[in-house]
Image (cartoon, rainbow, N blue to C red; front, side, top):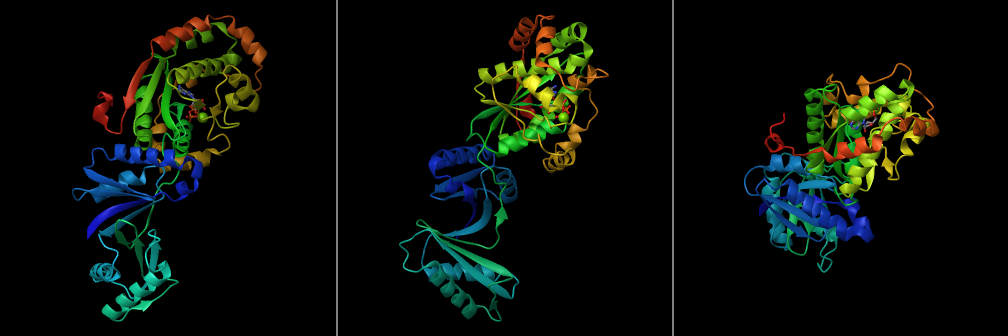
Length: 395
Ligand code: ATP
Ligand code: MG
């Protein structure tokens, strides 16, 4: 009998058309995430199994619980036999170590050639338990212990507790998206929600040194590192936005500063996405949160690009967004008080209903195409891992 971690991906198996791609992506992600954990991984139709080579079950479980596409994780005992007497003797050995008065046996039988039905197996196993351990009762509604038996083609499994996985789709199965990652609360949450839907992220951050500090950039790197827990590794594109922002500030009526600045961000983001084979942009815009996020603002900003923009938190209240930020442990980092490039050039009265036509007129006042090309040509790329050492000791 071997102790083993059994992984179930429930919902995935219903996605008939894409099942092959879903499973191969999940396999690859599990292998990647557990690369340094010293485990053996086995695959069987409908299940994956992880066998830690040392006693690091807690670490392995923690990693698997953050792997999207996994719906249930069980610590199970594997038996190389489907003989009920043999399985029964192991069940008894395991049960004798536990305190309980009532139980229920639940059986799954993926080996459909097995001579007994699931119900018959459960009944027989119940009989073996009652015969060998005194003072027990079966309780089908509210048992102290659930004895789960799975008879599979290659082996049989016993487990007692089910741990919920994080769900979602395996990361990357839907392709790549480019997250506009600021140091705020909303964009890391938007990133997390997209990863959960199977989108592999790259991120882009606009900085304006010396108006923005190294601390602000490091904050974004820390946030990217938190997202890397789910995304495996994040390629972070850092754009020096200073010249563009100063040109806007000097030449454009101040009520339009933010609208035009965001149009520039969108243009650059779309180009970086295209150059890196990302299919969509993702950002943390939320309807009505600030002047640049009214519907007219969104329309005036969005018109400069063709690529779809996904706004996962568009309809969430700030409180709902904060709740998720706390769950994924980005909140405390996001509220650190470092100036972002959006906050330093904020006009007193930003326009609430900007007009795209006026934006186009104002933009003629700056040589933005050239500025954008230079910013893209000189941009910095960091690969952010969950482990600090691999990030060039930036933090
Ligand atoms: P957040 O929305 O992340 O809390 P914020 O409120 O400071 O940050 P907004 O001004 O609301 O940002 O901008 C809306 C969205 O635009 C952000 O969620 C983010 O996706 C993107 N964005 C803003 N500033 C930057 C930046 N400096 N670099 C990259 N993306 C940015
Ligand atoms: Mg915001």
